[in-house]
Amino acid sequence: MEKESESTTIRPAAPADMDALMTLIGAVGLFTPDEVEDLRGMLTDYFAGTGGDDHFLDHRRRSGAEGWRTTHRSD
Image (cartoon, rainbow, N blue to C red; front, top):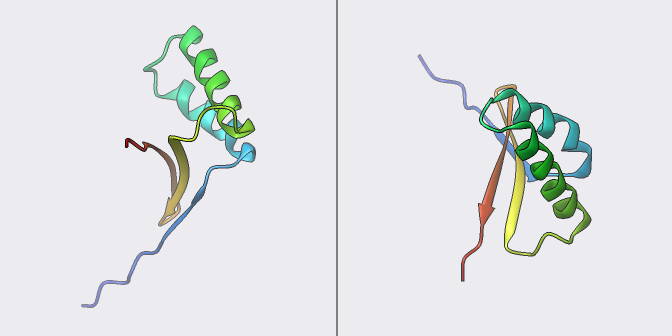
């Protein structure tokens, strides 16, 4: 039996992703409320373009599942 190919969509994260990102960050249970607010500030800076140019955040969708990935460019 032939397996159907799964496609993955990758795009840069956008300010419109903020609510979903914050929901995910709060739901994983790894961060205190203060840390969640710190992350909100970091994401706000990232989306405003003031968070530095060495971090990247992208959105991925595969087979209906969605997620985000952050990467850091090191020179």
